[in-house]
Amino acid sequence: MNEFVDLSSKVKYAIEKGIPVVALESTIISHGMPYPANIETARALEKIVEENGCAPATIAILNGRIKIGLKDDELEFLARSKDILKLSRMDLPYALAKKLNGATTVAATMLCANMAGIKVFATGGVGGVHRGAAETFDISADLVELSKTPVIVVSAGVKSILDIPKTLEILETLGVTVLGYRTDYFPSFYSRSSGSKLYMRADSPEEVANIFNVKQKLGLSGGMLVANPIEKSKEIPNDVIDEKINSALDEARKSGISGKAVTPFLLSKIVEYLPEALEANVELVKANAALAAKISKSI
Ligand code: PSU
Ligand code: MN
Image (cartoon, rainbow, N blue to C red; front, side, top):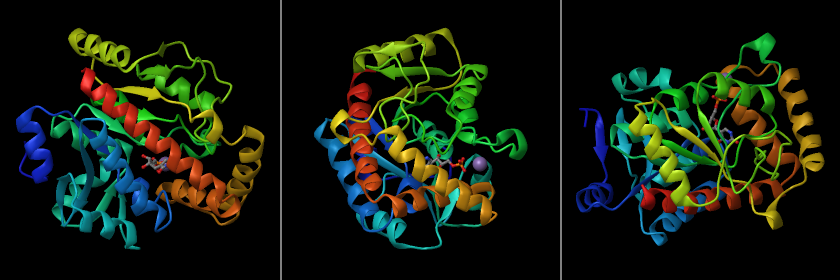
């Protein structure tokens, strides 16, 4: 372990005892959901991982330290504070050197999880290629991280705030294995299908784990993206959510939002326009945490 990493006592114990650990993201808490839904969800995810026989490790940067596993008051701090930074790969050296507080994105959570030898990570949606990327060049560092860092990311796909076909093209270019979990179509977060076909699927946690193990044995770098669709009874139809997403995108354009601020802005607008979206978000992350734990036990 490098000199910047602190394991929580629970995570340390799990590693010593050989209990599988599942990483959980913190940007979802600080920038992805409003208070108090964010703290309730963060706690619920930890519980689900435990109930499935694994140890949860929510990851964040606190006072310049990489925290693998957070105490309840640390979760609460991330959930309540207004000035938590959103940290991706590029930000880590700066945040550590300057002893800052920040939540980790999918990219940074993968990186930190890997430092602690954690192989499976549950989140909601990953970043991707933004609509209009041909003009803005806005492509999330999450995609590049998936090509570099050997961690399985369990997600509900990506939101259609992004250009999903282009996101899948970039993942293919980067050589990232994208598995549909019990589906042949890439999910669009709130909806079970984006309409984009996938080439690979897995139907059990063991199958996901086995594909990852083969990848590792081949010596191929990088992780895998598991796309786990939201449960049918909880989904929001594409046409309902797309209308809200279009309004949010319009508002972002009018307000001149750019860079790192784009994704959090769009997420908060969607929930403002359609409060049910928050409930769907919570449900899909919980399902991803449970699946991640099952995969983690099979590795
Ligand atoms: N997409 C979501 N919910 C999220 C995010 C993305 O549906 O919470 C967050 C994740 O932390 C992801 C980050 O890693 O936004 C991507 O940000 P950017 O597009 O700036 O790379
Ligand atoms: Mn971006």
